[in-house]
Length: 331
Image (cartoon, rainbow, N blue to C red; front, top):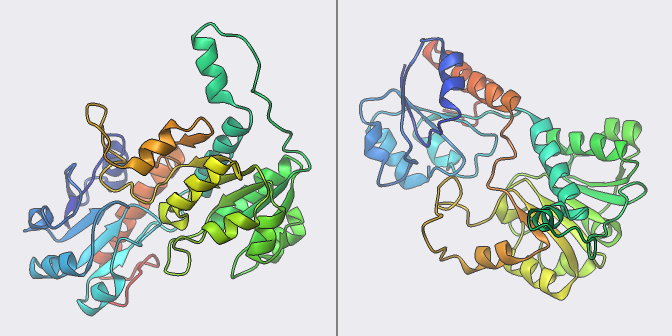
């Protein structure tokens, strides 16, 4: 198949080429899929897109006009694709559902540890030859209550890691896991109860209409004073304005995020020579108890290898007129 790979990053090209083994004709471009770039797919059989690319109804209509009938996502999330429209247009869409839950859960743990033990501030002081220890006190994770919102593949690994630290685990999910209950003594509770009792809340849920701005004023009000919130799921799962208010009031002790609800057009680009126009993001970056990484929780060798191999696998299935188990549409 002749495939246009949108939003291609330097680091992933070698992995995709290795997984491809010369089978498909891959063309890599840095541009994201949008109304401005959709015409670039003219003459291709399929496209590959990333989490920040746009595939709404209008763009899908244009892709259909260009005879694009296959879209393979290089991500697990697919909230950027209008699947209903894709199905109606007989466009097949597939994702990479489980590239490495360890990568995401371990990154969430890294954010938590760095925030709790004030590692960024400590390192800044050392770089300035300041070896004082004032205001660097954290707390033992052992015996603390960790609330895990979403106990799927990634949330399950987070349970395992936090259990290893000796934490009490509370979980919230529409589908409960008996294995997690039996193996790690996870206790499923209502979301409000989790917020009331957890010292740390880690989010591992997909973005849907039900989870959009799930963490808002009403739930923040229920939380413990000084709670740490970690989000490696989707940016819009939390209401940024409400989170900032919680941070300013001291209700939220610290925030660690790898995702941001308005990250589109900002993350994955070098804006060091520009002035950020997003005042909320600027405010978050300036806060000493906020740690932000630029959507790179998935960046491990294992995860990128799995993403590349599954992406090529999806294309292989379509070329052979087979259905891949990763398909999201009924096309």
